[in-house]
Length: 570
Ligand code: ADA
Image (cartoon, rainbow, N blue to C red; front, side, top):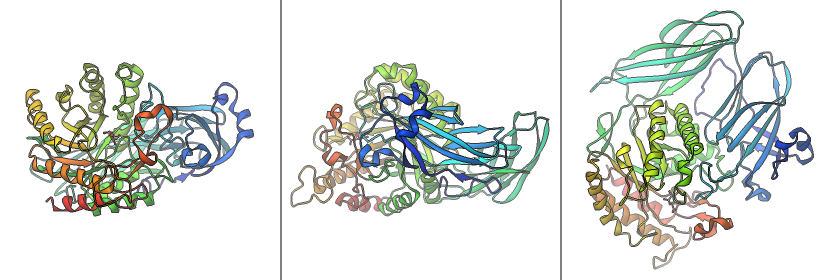
């Protein structure tokens, strides 16, 4: 399942999920020679979607792999093929021809095929999960960066006139609930003659706009449709009011779900629909020891249930775009989300930030994430990077094009990043919200260090003229190995973790200039302890053990403490 709701009532969707032929290719032979020759001898089966690093013999494999399946086309002669997550570099081949290349892993790859004959066709994917100096993330990173086709693959026959995109923008009248919406409906025709396509737009099943589009032979066209919602029910934290917008053509349709709400920042607050909200948050990697990044919907429901028990109203999608299904669940439960891309900087030198390749990859990823997620009301801010060396001019210059990329797609949401250098950061003025990652009690001294750090940071914000900007504690915590308890709070015990998290939360809550906290982390995650990753040798069991839950979602002592604190915050 890609979404929690049905995105089409007319257009048929088939998921190409299942057992595909699979072969790893450590020497990249398939690229240099013909993959057709290479494939059959080495072939085994892999389930799509999944991560190969969850197979015991490929536990640590990083590199190239090939996938192959047969797709049976029906009567239609044009199709949409969409990959919702292929890790790293991906090349897609259809009957031997390369039809798409993509870099990323967490945003979709869409191919439109025309002139398709009925019957079987060969679909091949080459993917390369190698991390290096110029990849996102950089080669040293504090999670396990799994390889594979990690999200579902969609196959849809298209009508002769089909919907390419439905984009909804809206404004809410100041102090009111009247919503003015403008939709851009992008159409595509596969016919050799000019056509006039009648279009209907529905809001929750009621027709709100009708019109026609003239589409040139084999061309495309964008139509604007406007409608007004009087007395709109606004979406908010804990008030998940949602609307379904559906564009309908004679042979095709598309449903987008939206929630209307206004986000503002200022006076050190984040306001939704004019009211300040205190973010009771958690960082969440989309990861599990059995599924890697390919977390199934059932587990997402469980994660959601746990978050609600914890009393959370906010999630940071650390550190990459998370599944649309997860964002749908957040929309439906009135929980806000910080979306970000995998620029993880704690061990990232400055050189890659100066590379045009990295800037281009990051900007593209931001744009793709925003295009995919723009209608989710839960998303209230876009994160451009995490813990890069924001003491440097290079980091400043690197941030500028990323901010431009975000602004070119979305001017309605604030931009944020997480700093690990609160005392020396110079990038602060560029963004709307600043997150601080600090680990007093774990790295860098006693937990009481947070008090002085925050005092200095607020002074620094004033010095930079950022007096109005909201400040979040975007990461803090300590490792506690599940089941490790005793009478004294020994380092690495649940007791110690509990003590650090509790003291930290109390300090942040007492600080009027902090408008939210994101505990690091939701659940323990696998990390990469290969020999070049010596800096992570304190990760017992090959896990980052700072989860409030262990990797199988069993609560540690700190879970109950955070729960008691979060549930007490109005
Ligand atoms: C950083 C980083 C996290 C994690 C954490 C830790 O702040 O952003 O991804 O690595 O530190 O556990 O040290």
